[in-house]
Amino acid sequence: MRVLLVEDDPALGSAVRDYLARDGHAVDWVERAGAARACLPGNYAAIVLDLGLPDGDGLALLPDIRRQAEPPAVLILTARDRLSDRVRGLDAGADDYVVKPFDLPELAARLRAVARRRAGRHAPVIELGALTIDPAAHVVARDGCPVDLTAHEYALVVALAEHPQRVLTRTQLEDTLYALDRGTVSNVVEVYVSRLRRKFGAGAIRTVRGIGYQWGAVDGDGGKARP
Image (cartoon, rainbow, N blue to C red):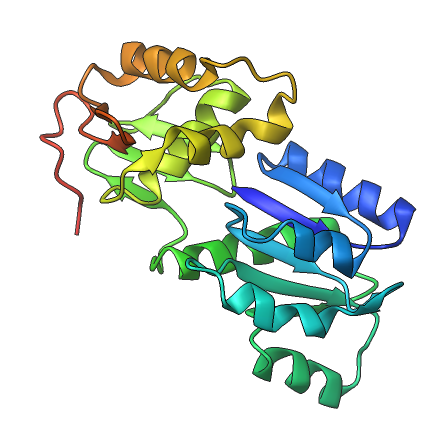
């Protein structure tokens, strides 16, 4: 998913950005509240938000974030560890609150959890007919057999499978791939859609002319999601 990281500490920001990128996320990193505000609106699934920023309190960004047409999940990442601070952050609209210092694997797991809630899912594994996706393990399987995917292919499959009823625009899918390849060519989405159709079948991804793409059906599963 595409993540906006708002963190003014250069060493910490770099470490979080790199770790989340390795975890398969497209990460935009800014160091100031003003720069974060300039990124809105954006096709972000989640925002990792520091509070003590050089040009203001990160909490002041929450009303702007919540006014977006499709508000992203917000995970506060801060050194403010008092109970009153945690309560204030959550009541202001944050979905989770992580106190520094923290472990990067836990941060990634919490991001996956808020992403599940945002997508209306409860189970950690996505199941769509013959297809299963384990975001924690980065494993995509078809009828129980793992499918070998590149980082770009995996990111595209997850983006489409997380919202199987929605049509995602080319721009939204390009944003998903953005941090994986900043030199993205104009037809990058078409290239990876073609590759995924070869691996999962022609009906796996539907083209909705003039709009974008939607997850279809893996050959043999009839397109029915498991209950």
